[in-house]
Image (tube, rainbow, N blue to C red):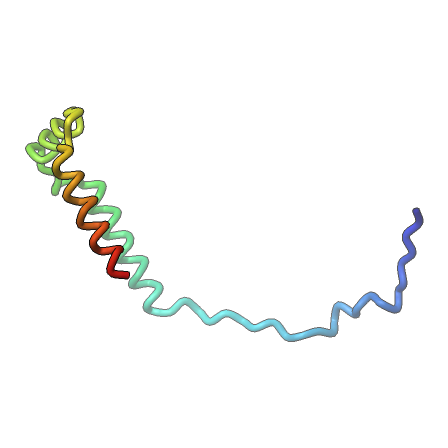
Length: 86
């Protein structure tokens, strides 16, 4: 198999559609960055962590009977009723 190149079909790289330039970063971008930075710092500080809630969550997660079957049944019934109406 032989490949032949047709030089008449190669477009001139200087000719084409102009490239749209990006605008400089706006104030919104810097505000978003600052908000993101503040959120990261708040997460790293960990001052909002409540040990009693963490202990409760660990206790619930270690319970093999949580959530109770009655709760799961009521949630499934509510979902079924909701989807039947659609």
